[in-house]
Amino acid sequence: MDRSTEELVAVGNRHNSPSYSPRDVVMDYGKGVQLFDRDGNSYLDFVAGVAVNCLGYNHPRLVAALRDQTQRLIHVSNLYYTAEQIELMETLTERSFADRVFLCNSGAEATEAGMKLARRYQRVVADAPERSRMVSMTDSFHGRTMGAITATGQPKYHEGFKPLVPDFGYLPFNDPSALEDIDEKTAGVIVEPVQGEGGVRPADPSYLQALRERCDATETLLIFDEVQTGVGRTGDLFAYQGYDVVPDIICMAKGLGGGVPVGAMMATEEIFKGWKIGSHASTFGGNPLASAAAKTVLDVIEEDDLCANVRERGQQLREGIRSLAESFPVIEEVRGRGLMVGAECGDAASEIVDHCFEQNFLINTAGGDTLRLVPPLIVSESDVDEALNRLESALTSWRDAQ
Picture 1 (cartoon, rainbow, N blue to C red):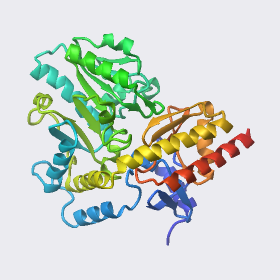
Picture 2 (cartoon, rainbow, N blue to C red; picture 1 turned 120 degrees about the horizontal axis):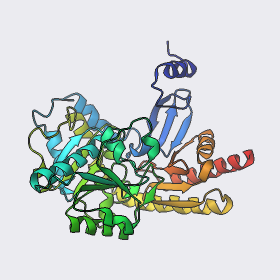
Picture 3 (spheres, rainbow, N blue to C red; picture 1 turned 60 degrees about the vertical axis):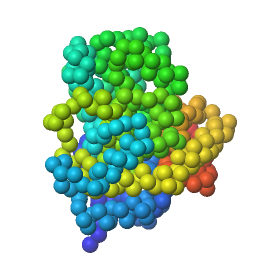
Picture 4 (cartoon, helix red, strand yellow; picture 1 turned 30 degrees about the horizontal axis):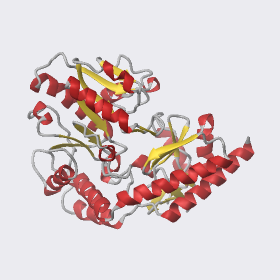
């Protein structure tokens, strides 16, 4: 007999790790940009698995690719090639600056790999063992492993985990005057083209250009953390392409598998001279199932020109929220690129998210004070109109409750 939602939530609350605090709802299935719970309620989903479900739910091509792959081969390890893995790596390099790819399972793993490659390149290839310092930005977020959390420039994520990994430094984001701190002892700089957990804050183009120039002048490797901005999210396949600033290393995950865990770290042939056999590894990285999913996602984005849709719908969404701000001054600023949109609402942000949930509209917060909207890349004009209607209703409900 099926358990009720209440029974399942009770069991979940009893056994789930205390690092999570999910709502008392049990999701059941999805279709397009709609998510449905076990009680038959439908939700307009502008969280999309936190920018993961880029093709929405039950996309026919992704479902077909996964169904076919599970019937053939799920995992064999990196002791052998599979056609799916080779074709994914070929596609990623053809559509980027990179020559080689390291496949893994998550964004944190991708950023760890990128930082390890930068340090080892400086020591082994550049013969500069003094270059061990890594630099990241304040308000950044790079993952939850020890190296990635050390690179994360938000002290709240460091609480209880010190001592952190040594030889890391932090610079203020979007401040070109601080770049002089990057020097001949710096191995690499890691930066998000658009800060996600920091409040959906895009980098200024001039800032990224100045950062590239400073890294070149000091022979420091520039790492772009595109875990959230990559795979079409900002209106280009990779955000660096829209900024016209090419990094040395790029890290990605989230939307790459359309919901299947997969990450990638890419660089040029020269930079990958820093690794040899055994320098790094990932047991599940690039297995046939994940590779088939990622290749399908990349193909659909290109063939359906989803980047154009991202640019158009992103503009529609930002303009719509700015219009709402005229009636709801709690919205202090609207920012973002493509379908990575933030609306700063101060201390009211979490309460507004709750009111959105009551309207069956799913969003979340970033940076504590910002509403984050990252819908699937397939979102339509009418979907965005409906999202704006539900956001308006939520804001009205929030205002009336004050």
